[in-house]
Image (cartoon, rainbow, N blue to C red; front, side, top):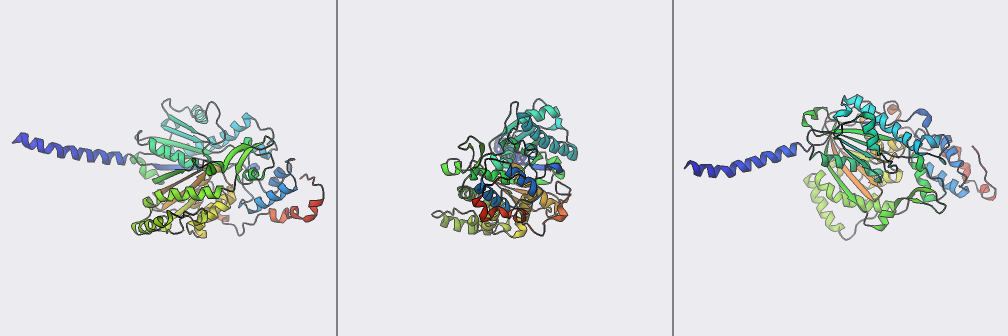
Length: 461
């Protein structure tokens, strides 16, 4: 009888053991952000109207047509007077940037943000288990991860990853890598560093599709600290709820729309084509199909299912139409949109039916810091925190686009009310400004005068 009972109870105990093990594994798979630090360059690195004009006008490869194109682009870019440029460009050495300049640019951003991150959290560099660095355009040997390990004398068993070529959406690629690493390495600390090398890659030619990057991209970056240790959850500020990555690299059109190339004269630069918005719309649509069921409540999912059936035959190719049939505010409280440019922000805003209040953080991050590539999302997040918008239980949808072509989105849950000081603390009271009109309109509108088409243009500012 006892043997019979034992045989009957064994399967029950086994099932109970499997359930407990699954629960414990699930508990250990959390991804919590403890802190983040955005980079703010010194005052002497600001690119205001006059300094931007000097940079443009000293390029002897440009003619009147290119000057007018740049004037129109700068005026409509959404950038303000206080963005920061690379040190080599400010010094007028964009034509002769060296490897040492590239290392210095990275060191200033990376070490400044990491020093502040370690000081804020009290976590020692020797406690870091996982290190992920993403810089798309600069991949030296030894790697930038090795540079950080050497600087802070980190442990020899640290798991280090150096990501390059991932574009503006690289931050969330790095976060996804951390999240998956946490499934293997328990009770760990992870650091993600996201920035971009601007100075050595400043375009010096005259192709319009490649001049756009000079108008939009600025110096910046961010370092973040994560953990999967539930005992430290009370110290965390965000919890990652879900992350979805979409890659359209199999499409030639999407692959080519955002690419580093040489122009006809051999000048290296970053080409942005008119197909970019189409690729963004396609990637965003594909991403939302997977993300929406994880974010929105049942009533919205039913609507999504019905509309999705109708869209199988007619997918929109316009960014401002993607997701317009959904009420994202039913499952999301804040929208952290990559500040890649005014057109991107406007398109996502129209597509998701967002208000100006929802778009304000992205517009202000673009205005104050410019497009800082992979680091841009965290300046948007910092604006929300500085404005004391983030309350415990709120959900934040992060939306990013990058070369490849990629769309990577995720949802964070705010774990406590946030109002701490960050990179915005010195200027947050002046935002949003009364007007976003670019001073170029008043100072340099003469570039469009018709008489200039009949004279030789020789400018020196």
